[in-house]
Image 1 (spheres, rainbow, N blue to C red):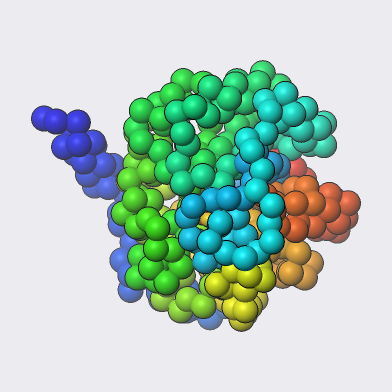
Image 2 (image 1 turned 90 degrees about the horizontal axis):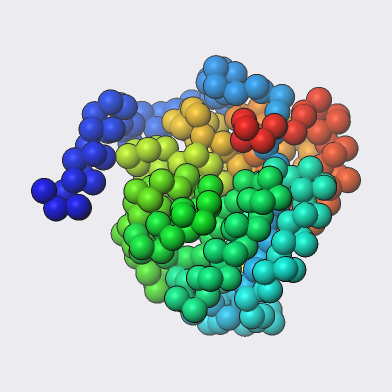
Length: 332
Ligand code: SF4
């Protein structure tokens, strides 16, 4: 049996052990009366997690801007006029100094993002040194570097990488409206390489990009029916950025956003559902509803790659009002 067939067989075995969600089931859950939806999501959440703990990650852009891809939401694409200045790959020592600060501030996971289509061979030594250095600080490591082949994924795993982020962004149907420089299937291939190398998968998407409700359901359905559920599922609310094709997009209705979080929680009970970009545009009450619906992870720090994020003081104050505690490292 060749390697591909072998992997497919393994995936089929896992799928056979876990029931697949149907489109109709997922849509019915998403559309159920809001109180029923929240009750179900909170029940699933309590069966799998401490409902009053939220995992905190810190994100650093290790290489900003100048990206050859054309993701319609992104300020870092060289094809958009967002005014963002491109930078080179950050020096390893600077990354480690920033990681140390994040650890002192309470973050347990350090996420490093580079605006690349995929990492080049010449960059791999530095990337490996960053992973090893952050691990030595006693933190979990996560990277997002674009598409990976199996060899690259295995090298990152050997360096000690815990998580790799690669979002599917939206539904397969809507994908071409947002990105044309790589396909939905390319994304799934990278996810398979990450999974097969033994790195935990962080994969979610963005809502509020002009998609329909069915696209939000389909995006989550794709994730929920992967051979293994992603360990982390970041759900981003679009921050429209001037100069990008989605700079004028209408905001998503908050209740629709909360429904998306609840459906993610119900279909992927053991995954960390992360309230990611867009929290600056959410009221405290909307964030509280998202936590009730099953979100249990956030990014801390006042920037997210290039976008704004609530400052730590604001998050600490909100957590205090809600009685939420940070999640311990081995639980997150
Ligand atoms: S989202 Fe990532 S791949 Fe897409 S343009 Fe931005 S940096 Fe590049």
